[in-house]
Structure formats: C-alpha cells, structure tokens
Image (cartoon, rainbow, N blue to C red; front, side, top):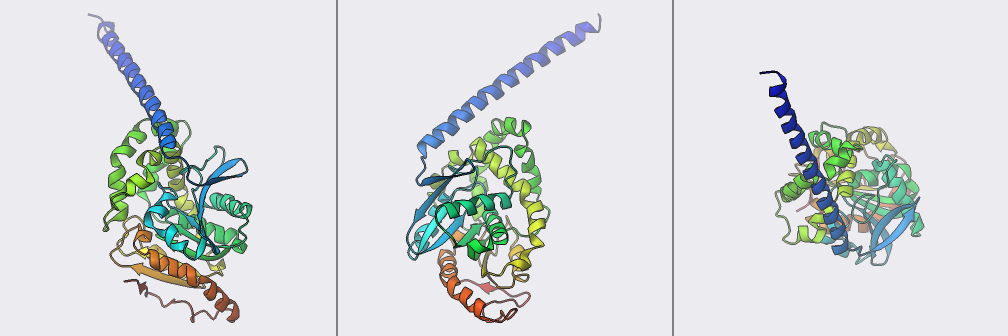
Length: 348
C-alpha cells in the first residue's frame, strides 16, 4: 500500500469540505444581503437627508426654539432617542435635531476614510451648518458622547453646552473593542460581516440589549422600535466595529485637551453601568472648568431612558449657566459647578 492511497482520499475529503463551506458562506452572504435590503424597505427613513462631501446623513427634526443636537451611541440609531422619549420631551421647548451617525440607520459611511469620533464630529458640524444651525446644545450618549466631545473641542463656536451620558473619556483596557476589531478590517471583515458575525449578531442581540439596560428592564417595544434587522446589517456592523476600534486611541488623544472646554458640561452616568465605568464621568468632572455630574442610582448604561427629565432640565438651564459663566472672572466657577473631589449629585 502506497502513501498516496492514504493521502488522496483525505485530500478529496478536504476539497469537498472546503467546497461545501464556501457554498454555505456564499449562500449565507446572499441571505444576509437580502435581509439587509428588506430591512431598509421595511424601515424607510422617517426624516430628511443632507449630503456633506458626498456622504448622505439622515436626521429627524422636531419642535421649535433653541436648537439641541442629539448623537446616539453604538449599535443603535436616532430611534433610540425616540424610544427613550427624549426627543418628544426636549421638543416641548427646543428644536431637536437627531442625527443617524455615519454608517448607522440611514446614514452612509464611505470607505477610504478613518471614521474616528473627530471625523464624525467634523462631518456633523458641517451638517449642522448646512441646516442653518450656528450654535446648539449637544447631547451625546456612549460613543455619541465621544463625538459630542470632539465637536466641542474642535468646533467650540458651534457648541453652546454639552450633555454627556454614559460616556467613555479616558483610555482603558476594553476587551470588547479588541474582540470586535477584526470585523472592521477590509476583506476579512467583509467576509465576517456577511457570514459568522451576521449570524452571531442575530443570536446575541437580545442578550446585548438586556445587558445595556440592566439593572432596568428593556422596554417591551424597544427592539421593534429600533429594528433588529437594521441593527445587524453589514454596514452597521462595520460602523460598530470601527467605532469600537477607535475608542481607546481617541480617548487618549482627547483627554489631553479637556481643559480647553469653556462651555457648561453636564455629565450623566448610571451607578450600575457595566458597559462604561461611571468613574469615567467622575474623573472627567474633576478635570472640567465648568462641569456638573449626576450619578443616577439603579441605572445602567441606557441612563437616558431613566433620566429624561433631568437631561431635559440640564439642557433647559444651560443658556442661563453660560451667561453666568461669561459674567464671572476667569477661574471662578464654584457658583455653578460641583467640583469637590469624590462627590457627585444623585438624581432620585
């Protein structure tokens, strides 16, 4: 018996397995693309588009008054603010503009560009200007808080005040970001987003959402409102992975500049947030010229679903706070801020 009598059957079996695997991957990719297109048909844009440098940005606007810009977190879209009730709450007193960040919802994310929080902030600031908004209060959640911070640092003339909820502001070890990074890569990431990652995202989505809301319950209609299939499209999976990959380096770069902020900043953090340590917000508060911190008891990462009234109140009082700060001598901030180390205001 020769060596070839053993190896040839094994090679044939390997080739057959490879062909079967390739066929399964191709079939999965076709199915994923079909589901993605169907999701976009089933969930048409409910707002308007503005094009900046050829990039399509989707936004919704509601209400009248002083402008407020809302920037959502990772994995979701502006519909998260719809589901929380924050858009309707703010629209009582303000013109609310809620963007879909690039690559999420109905906004594009073109190739050949590093979509850091700073790059997103630049694009969205130009979108604001294109909509005739010279200056606005900007509220961001999670990754959206990083984008809001970048906008305030790079375009301070466009930001009257900041409200940041569940934000990540200082570099730390993020195992989730390291695990997600390959999905952002060209070629390999493309294959993953149309096969294993697309399937895994569908299986794990409810568990992920539950963890984000914990210890609070997920609202009964939440996943239907934000649309599961919109969340697991390949484009959105790429945007999520890229955002996660840029978290640590962007936090490192921005954290050197936080002392530049001169506008009022209000921070909200869930006391039981497992996605982003609330100590991130506590640390930032101690480094701000004009900062106020609310630690919300019995709340997790989705703190804006719990503290809508407090967030709205912070935005409502920001103009008066800004006027007071302008009247104060440089460095005198204790009238408005709460900067005693180790302390926090609790919202009941």
